[in-house]
Image 1 (cartoon, one colour):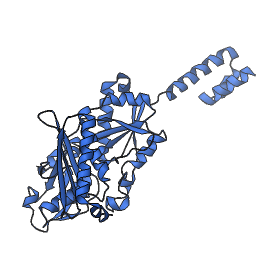
Image 2 (image 1 turned 45 degrees about the vertical axis):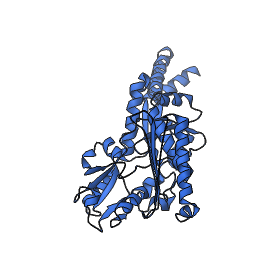
Image 3 (image 1 turned 30 degrees about the horizontal axis):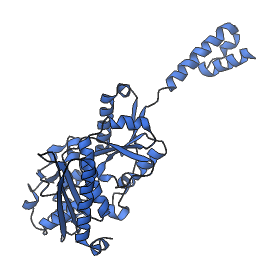
Image 4 (image 1 turned 180 degrees about the horizontal axis):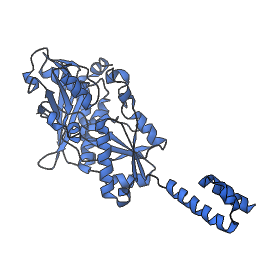
Length: 356
């Protein structure tokens, strides 16, 4: 009986029945060796599976995360230790409608969050400006990578700035934040919905669908495409989106190993600035129908300077506020919250009702 089990296994592994004629003491060691090789080939598994959207920019951010993890932890530098898994989100699939019309919050994160919670991935890499102010139960976001330049880039084939565009010019943008600030300062211009990744938007611009567009400089830089910018808008000209230029990395709240890995990459200045801006957004209950902008940064004295903006989509009404205080988590969260309550009171309930 023992001899038959060995020869059967040998037949299935090597595809030859000749072992039936071999002495039993010769067959079994060969089988054991073959099984060991096969098991070894299957034993290699990724230590970290990174979940990300599939756009070139999202992949660039995932690769940046992977490279930082490899540099910080020798075991992650081995071949195959980190795997990148692409996940399609609702925001990636539905491109023919404004973001506000297909659900607003979580359009670029929901499916990735689900993959994180069901164990398909171990960490999730997000553009922080896409992350809702609440996190799904069971997940945490312990890491922000160093923030890139927060400014917006103006891109046009016919003008050097917004001010140079003739009346009636079309500007392509899916962002109500950009739309409201453009129309507030340049009411003679027109803003039309403009969806798609960076490459798609630049292609549409070159094909003449619009006269100009605005893109986050951070994204252009991460794609090594900053040369496409015609000019840069200062934060006084165009206040950035909440958390613009920041990458956030989430994991499951009960995964201590991933928490340890991610904590080693965290850039605290960025984490605090993002927390301040997101608190401002949370108070205003911002969604894709609410033009909101904010920027917190460490000033030359080492303190936090904050600017926040709330506007109507057509740019006819704009509320702004500023804050300054210690660059510490509690103080900055309090500043963001207080600034949000101020603008919410200034706008009044009727303002938000009109945006629904």
